[in-house]
Amino acid sequence: MKILVVSWYMPPYLTMGALRVGKLCKFFHQSGHELRILSCDDLPFPNNLPLEIPEDLILRTDSLDINGFPKAVQKLRLALQGLFAGGSSSVPAVALETGGSSPGIPVSETANDAPARPSLAKRTLRMLRIVYQELLNFPDPQVGWYFSGKRGGGSILAEWQPDVVFASAPPFTTLMVARALCRQRKLPLVVEYRDRFYEDPYASLSNSFRKKIERVVENWWMKDAKAIVTVSEPWAEDYQERFGLPVIPVYNGFDPDDFAADHPRQPTDSNILNIVYTGILYPERRDPSPLFEAMSLCGDAGKNIRVSFYGADRDTLIAMASRHGVLDQIDIHDSIPYQQSIDRQMNADILLLLQWNDPKERGNVPGKVFEYLGSRRPVLGIGVEDGVPARILKERDAGIVVNDPGIIAQHLKSWLAEKQAQGKIDLLPMDARKGLSRPEQFEKVETLLKRVADDAS
Image 1 (tube, rainbow, N blue to C red):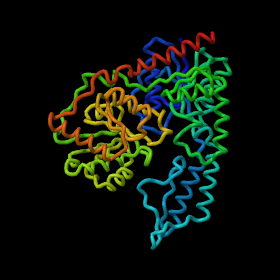
Image 2 (tube, rainbow, N blue to C red):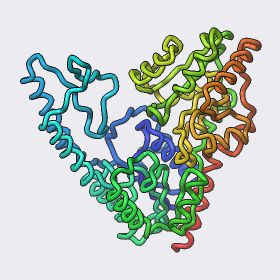
Image 3 (tube, rainbow, N blue to C red):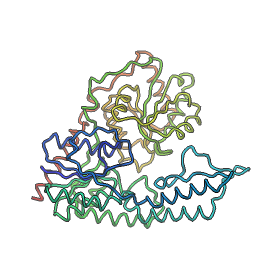
Image 4 (tube, rainbow, N blue to C red):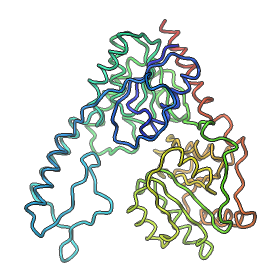
């Protein structure tokens, strides 16, 4: 089967999207399929994720930064502000793509601690920035890739004809590029939703007009799709009901090549329970505060619990841990290469999973869930307690998802007692990860693509 994969993310850029798509392409390549990949070059992420297919299968095109002009204006304003402000100081404006406050930067205060009111010029610039983003960052800030992506895809199709096109989103500009290519060449399109667009639970619902436009645009680009791949059963049910297309849920899974059963486990201090988290934090949405409160509830025993964070914002963590008096039990590390993160997970006692404690999160299944199961370490989850990750962990007796600090404290004490009694926390049985390897999951994608390609021929 000849497969064209369209994805903004690909290794070596270290993101969960690049990891999933890169592993899927590895599976296709090892399964003997003829493969081409259209992707974007020079992404703003660490570039240390191993590429496991030949580079010459990938065409990486450039992308126009549509926010380049307002970013330049912002830099100029800050430079002029620093030049003419004299002794006065104010909060540096954050990068345009964040649209929020900058962690760890103190807010300017008046003598009575009240925040200074922004000047008319600042308020005007902020409003112009918001209007600019709403109008031009559509469907997302990566829309600047649309034309170069189309040109790159056209150059591939001028010399090679795939049986099926597989487009993975986000960013959702990817789906617009893939749709245009499929319409030009009358090719069948299969769409992958790794995250939501119109129904995105993390998106602000304040702009109801934009949400209406998003729904219309999503319906438009899905008109040419023949099938959908997504990451969980609840999302699959939603998409099937909405679009009336074949939909399959395909978990991220873990790669057995990365999580070998005989991976060396380093001995650790038998008096210390080591908990590891790899990834970023979102205050109130991926928030370890219940764990920190539970550690403080453990009293003297809690002093023997250490939590290591890799890649989370330092200032955010310091504020959270200090609030609960456990700062001296927290180790904060910069983001590390993927293979190193696997090693940290394999050598932890307990692995921490953070999600949003909200019903909207039920169908969201972080790829980290499967890395943790691949590591065969017990999982402590904080977040929605009746979501797909909680069900998977419960069915496999691989961990818990709970938000009550008192209950978390009980589990911490139990794990600590086990560690101190036998010098280690037992590995999960191999059955805990059965059926969740990437090859086992990706076989479902392969079967779907073959069916779509056969129907089109």
